[in-house]
Image (cartoon, rainbow, N blue to C red; front, side):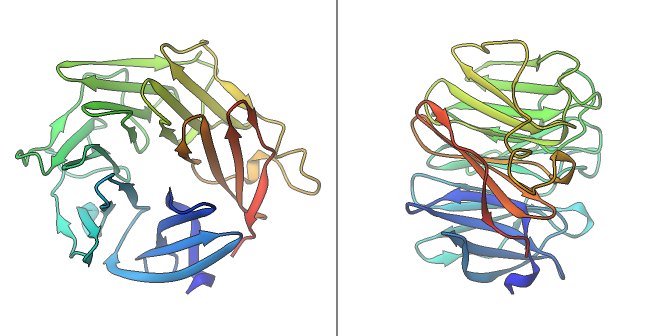
Length: 297
């Protein structure tokens, strides 16, 4: 199975030390796959019994539950839950009013008992549905700044807090947040800080956000800690070009995947068309160079 596993398209969740759980879409027939990454190896890849038309999203609740959201046939949206009893059959969760979606979903847990699924609808709005909270409705989260043009990336730094990042049609990074009744939208960075594909957001703790996106020239990084420290994002144009024999950023595809194992710890994964899955890490006060997790499959 591993020779058809698309490691560039899926969700990565840290598990044991130096281990990651990966949820992705098999290249040949679109089946949902779970596998473990450890020390450059793919361990125990297995089918979960569902067919996808785009990359899945996944989250791990502190209560020991995995939740996966994915797009199926006819752009329908589905939710699958895994717990101590194994994986449960996927359930249809419908879709936004007005018909259809243009993106893969994002999924996040704001408390141990619920998960929120977010998606960009065919109307180019951001839509949200809470599972387990008593309401079964899709709710639009507008108005926002221009029409949306990517999958959202949702994250929560604590109970009741939701942050969502998405690219608009002008390749600007937009940020939506809500906490209780308060919510809002903002555009981040200068107009020249454009990027491609979809953003990836992560939080290592209360009050901290890190967001990554690919620009035409490199990896962009925005961060929040009581405020956004600068109008322009930090950039990582050079590190991958400095690896001997590794082509530049035009070989990176598609979106980055950012994860955190704990306080002041970050890991960013990108897919390289020639050299496979690449990783860069941050621990306390410094970034490590780009390294190869494993070669192209």
